Length: 352
Image (cartoon, rainbow, N blue to C red; front, side, top):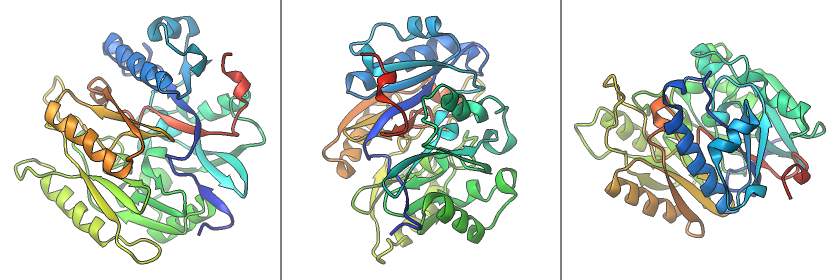
């Protein structure tokens, strides 16, 4: 049961489009633009081929067209010229809720993951989409007095929200509010009647203070999909073991344990300075019909992760996308995408 008839939609409910932002020379991607552009082109081709529609932010339309290339379904891609600091639309794009039977696009504040990075343009993206009528004025809601990143919260669409203590109670986001205060805010803004607080879990190289979408994800039928670690010599072993133990203690609103599905942890991947990168299979995007799964050139782990995800989503098509370029900037597939739901904008803005 949700609060005040507000329902934070689950990711697997019917989306209208997927919001992305193309890396450009003024972002931190400048030193590897060809590599990351190739990744984005493959990801967008896979999404549009699978019937998903993509709204792609770009600084220059012509450059974006040349980067993406010829698509089988060009009518599924909309280019929107806009300024932005970085490409992680998951964290500054609007969150989707229903208030009664009406959709709402909630625009929360974004401050560069707790004042770590510049975010002056990112924090204005939703207002730019509003100005361009990508988001309809009657559906937009200003929630910018509260800092909330999309990658920090998971919803089952029925009143349960899962998040991490390390991220949401961060003093550089909302002044270090207590869990009790945050529970009330999540109830008021997202209709959360049941909040699961994950106290353990962190990936080396993660700049987000343990976003939930790197560690554990909600799925249908009271299921939680989580990142495991079976290698006792891995630096993540102890923390992820504690995380798993806490997940076994979580209960549904009805008092039942969750069904737990464990994803493998990718073998270590390092940057050019020898720093470990936060590769995770939990950073997938699920839509009504498809799952876009990040893979990392590790045949055994990649295959196991794709097979495992089908346990929770047996009716979905699993589409692997090589995301080794994305993790070079400490994010992955889910971080680079944000689903927008039907009713937020006029379908006529797409070609055809």
